Amino acid sequence: MPEAKLPPAAGKSDEKPPIYLLDSMAFIFRAYHAMQRQRPMSTRTGIPTAATYVFVNMINKLRKDFSPHYLAAVYDLSGPVFRDERAREMKAVKKFNIKTQQFDMIDYLGYKANRTEMPADLTQQLPFIRRALEAFRIPILSYEGFEADDVIGTLSCKLSALGHKVYVVSSDKDMMQLVNEDVVILNPTKDNLILDRAGVEATLGVPPERVIDVMALRGDSIDNIPGAPGIGDKGSVELIQQFGTVEAALDRAEEVKRKTYRESLQNNRDNILLSKELVTIHTGVPIDYDTYSSNLHARLFRLDGDLWAEDLGSTNGTWVNTVRIGDRTRLEKGDLLQVGGTVFEVGR
Image (cartoon, rainbow, N blue to C red):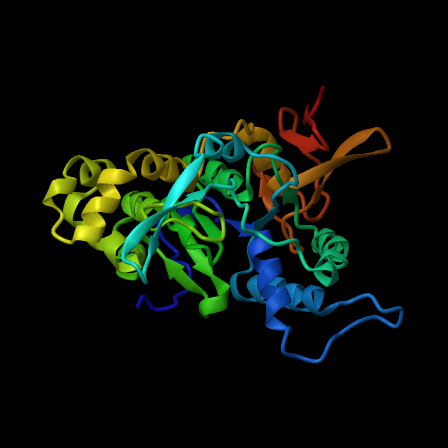
C-alpha cells in the first residue's frame, strides 16, 4: 500500500504554487457519516451541526497540513447531467445470480437511480457548510449539466497545462484516472495519502490510463452503472492486466478461460461499452480557464475609483500575475481577474 507523504517540492510546483481541488460532496457525506455513532450535535434551536463541525475540521486540517495557496471547493449542481441522456439507451441489463449461477434480465432504471434521498438532517446543514467555505474565502465551483468530477477533471488538465501541480482532494477511486505527472490524488481521510502514477498502480493493479477500463467492467452500484455482470473487483483487474483495454477483452472474449467472465463479455458488449462512457470523467467541460483560474485567486472591488483585488485563495496572501493581492497592493494594467461572471482587464 502506498505510504502517506507530503507534496514533493520539485518539478512544476517549483515554478507555480500547486492548486488543490476539493471533491466537496464526497467529504460532506464523509463528515456526516463520521458522526452517526456519536451523540447528536445541534444548536439551541435544534439545527443539526455535526456534519458542519466535522467538515470544518477537515478544512482546517487540510489548511494546516498543506497551507494551500490556491484551494477551490467543487460542487455538483442539482438537475440532469449528460450521463443521464446516455444511460437512457440502456433499457435492460443482466445481473449475475450467484445462487443459480445464471444471468437474470432486469429493467434498467437509469443513471444513479439507486441513490436514496439525502438525509433531512444533512440537507439542513448544507447552507451552513457553504457559509463556512465562504468564511474561509474558498471559492465554490460548479457547472450546469456536468458533475463535480468533470469540473475537477477539466480544471486538472487545464491548470496543470499552465504549469501548476494539481492535487485532487478526494477519496473516490474514479479520480485515479486523472493522475499523471502533474496531477495526483490527495486523500486526507487516509493520513494524507498521496497517489501518483506508481501509487495508483500499487492500489488498483493498473496504471491511471487503464482505470476506466477496470471501472467499466466492475460497474458501480451506487451510480447504477451495470458494468459486466459476474465480473467483480478481482476479475476486472485480471482481465485488463491480460488484455489491456475493455475493447480488447470484448474482441478476444473467447480466450477467457473462466466461463462466467467469458459469457459476460460475449453477451453484454453494448452495455459494457456504455458503462465505460459513464465512468469516464469528462475533461472537456466548456470552462474558460482564465475565468476559473482567476476565480481561484481573487475577486475585484473598486475603492475611490481605483481597481483593487482581494484574495480568495488563502488568508496569508497569494500571487496573481506577479501582483501581491493579500495586502491590497495595487494591480497592474493588463491583469485579468473576475468579479462574479465578468472578467475585467485592469486599466479598461
